[in-house]
Length: 306
Image (tube, rainbow, N blue to C red; front, top):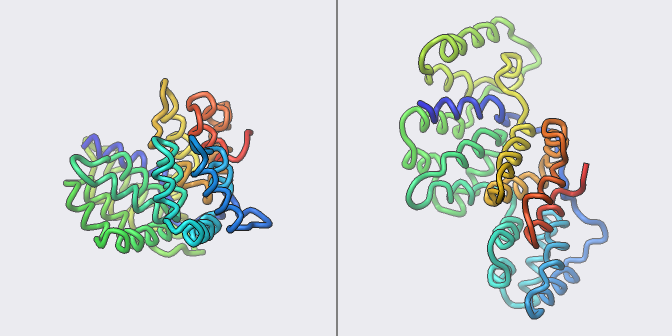
């Protein structure tokens, strides 16, 4: 029940629902020359000791589509796959970040979901973060990529790796059967849902999960915002980043996952929320809690100080 309560708390803050206008920190570079970029990366990999700075400068400041074009040119030129070459040249957190950037956002999310359920134990935190915070459109794209990459359905893997009410909540979210937003505000339905959620959660001992599932997974996001169920997913990510850098030694997997997956989506808004609620910029916090080439790559994705 503790896991379910935590999940419901995360869900109310983070749920994505409909897609929002994009506010990326990484945008397509002008005067783009994929052949030149591929040649520079090839030279950087072949340099004695590897020229990590050049690799960071190029791959963190190009859009996903541009990185794909660089990868195509690199393979044509070097006769090898760029991701494999990066894997051989880099290590640790920098390697994980750069390999993440070589995937589309949906591919990266699908990989992170798969990794959270592979092997012994399940990383519930990753499942909660990813399924609560992605919009319905994003979830559909993730499911498609998951199927193509792993020849499995994500719902089946979730059902096989989780149990009880936690599994029911996850599956209700991933099945994406939400009402379409309407211009007409149904205040009676809002009042009924608010009362039902109160009766199901606040008023009673334990949580009536069935009620939460039916309302939280089926109503449109504008409807749920009127019930004040859903708050601000950029604040959710800002808080996750802050938590990952609270103690000495950052939680680098969390940092990498959020920075890579949100840099072309809404990282600019996340930066704003971070500064507003934590009274210092995301850039300064990353600079304090990380180091080396990994730090340089994160700061480049961050896109500036506030």
